[in-house]
Each structure stands twice: as structure tokens, then as C-alpha cells.
Length: 280
Ligand code: AMP
Ligand code: ZN
Ligand code: FE
Ligand code: FE
Image 1 (cartoon, rainbow, N blue to C red):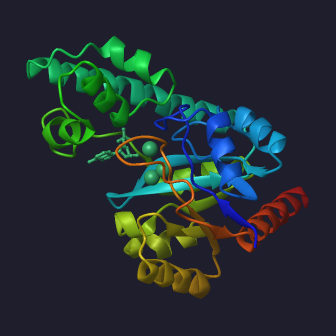
Image 2: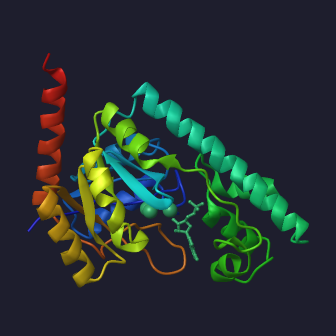
């Protein structure tokens, strides 16, 4: 039985593993295929592809975009897209700038609260173009300003806590179009986490290609619920661990094993789109 993990983060966003470390773990766990879905970037894909190929695994290019529809936050996974697509690259660069600016705002809020975190220490630790709250939390721990990541989020960084700054999100409809014009497939990430059922029909209407039915934080019942929805709308099924490496707990890679047939369906759907796009 072949299986895949289609939701993984590296240190090109807020994961702790380098692409090579992640691929090595995937290999040890027996995966046939891995996808990389770093937040607002495709930069790690080249190294991850090389590492997967060297380890005898298949690699699927991906990214995870933060979007919204009707004020509901929704994460969009884009798969099998062209990582050189100019529009994709310019849009993700814009959101990377938003992320960096948000880090500055969160550091300024912390400083106002008499928490002397230096913003440069966050950027140095993140060492990537897509920094996020986990980097702020890790920098706070490193500077001994909090005891652990939980304290960082509970006291300062969680939504509506004093150092929290909302993140600008793209519209989900634009996100789907952005992924499609780059030749990719748009999948709603972890629908059971955001409880985004009510917006599914509108996104399907806008061309959403599938749902991430299997996710570390989905119970069996939740997965079954979303499988039923993919059946109803004829959508693709994906799944992944959403592993961020070493954060609070041990690495999540290996907790979700997506049957390989879904990877084949994903590839078939992507090639059908390419063929359709080539028709006059
Ligand atoms: P951001 O994209 O900057 O808003 O950060 C979101 C990331 O922070 C998510 O991918 C989570 O991994 C992490 N995160 C969010 N809330 C918490 C929390 N309460 N404790 C630990 N990590 C969290
Ligand atoms: Zn993340
Ligand atoms: Fe997500
Ligand atoms: Fe994720």
C-alpha cells in the first residue's frame, strides 16, 4: 500500500525542518510521495524536489495561502502549480511583505508592553521570507521573555491577545484564480479546523478543486463528513499531517497517510486542466 503526506512545512516558512531533513523523515516513514505547502512561498520546492528524488520519493509542488470569504478564514492549498508563474510570484511576494510588516507591528506591541523583544532577533531566527507568529514565539522563548511557546501564544500572540495583529488575507475567490492561472489545483485546507462548511458551495462555484479530508486534527467522523461532501460535489480528496517540525510536540509527519490513489487523481485533474487550457 502506497501513501502520501500532502501538507508539510519547512523552514522556508514556519516549520523547523530543512527540506532535506523533512524528506529524510518521510523516507524513513515509508512515504511514496510528499508535497511541500509552505505559507505564502514556493521557494523550498526546488530543494525538496531534489531531496525527494534522491530518496526515491515522488514530490508534489505546493503552497498554502491564507484567504477569507464572508469574513471566514480559509487556508487554500495550491498543488502542481508553476513555481515560476509571474503573477503567482508577485502575489506571494506581496503577502510576504505583509507578513514581515506584521512581525514589526507585533514586536512594537510587545515593546509597548515592556517586553524587550528585538524585532531583528525574530527575523534572524526566522531566516525566511514568510515569517509568522511561531517565529515571534520562538524568539520570545530564546530571549527568555517567556517560558515556552504556549505562554507566548496565551499571553501575547493568540487572536485578541495584546500583541496580536490581524493578518491581511486575500479573498478566497482571488486565491483560487491565482492558483488556477498558475496551472495548479486549489484545495481547501483542514476544513474541520476552521469550520468553513457554509462557504464551500460558493468556493466550489468559483472553481475549488477539492477538500483536505484527512488532517492531523480531523477525527474519523470529521474526515468522513468531508469525504461525503467531496462525493456530493465531485471534488478531489487530499490529506496531510500539517507537520511544522519540532514545535510544541513531536513532529506530526507520519500521523496522516493518504492512500496514493488520491495523488494519481490529483495529477490526472491537473493534466486535464492543462489540456483544456491548450484548446483554442
Ligand atoms: P500566522 O500565520 O503568523 O498567523 O501563524 C499561524 C501559525 O501559528 C499556525 O500555523 C500555527 O502553527 C501557529 N499557532 C497558531 N496558534 C497557536 C497556538 N495557540 N499555539 C501554538 N501555535 C499556534
Ligand atoms: Zn504554519
Ligand atoms: Fe493552515
Ligand atoms: Fe499548514
